Image (spheres, rainbow, N blue to C red):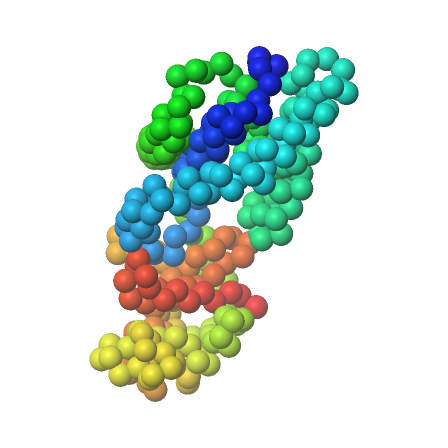
Length: 298
């Protein structure tokens, strides 16, 4: 693989590894966004505020994160790789690849514990994060040895590759190579259940006879009269009726609820989630920074 081209270890090599870490971070973020193309965005759509923050702060934060990732992943993998390369039979790259996997095996536990993908996926991603900087540092690329060129390659190269990744993902989704999220199609009978938000105690019971029973269900306040505890929405408790709303060009299918005790609020909940784990959700306010509430079927 060429890892035996030279022995890294000088200050310039460490800086080059940190620049490589800086380069791969925005690419990894772009890949994560592409992987989330088929996730439910709950009506939030494209987060323009978040993108603006990334554009402003990325040139400041990325070099720091690059050095941090280099210190906790790339350098330990490289140091362990030197030891294993002397003990593993065959080419030196085998020992370095094994070292990257061993370090990645430890780091992959954290995202897996946080519910970010599966352990095998996290293992492969972490292994790439550990291996790529060490590989770059062993290549005879003299033209990136100067510090300014290193960080320029890391920042601007990473941003360009991230942009190309997003464009490729959008094109792939447009031509059908990547899946597009589709909410589950639930019949009226499948909506008959008790739906709850375990975090705030809100509950919605939909009966087969068309009756609805609400307990502290969030509802958008049409006239701005919500209480001080919930300034952007009100809470509705009472009984009423419900009906299934078919999906159309204005939105996905959902549930419309009519409760006489909540005449000044709108009660429209949209179907989301998956076929196995359906959800009802509502988003109040600006999609970029709104209040999202999700009910799951009990």
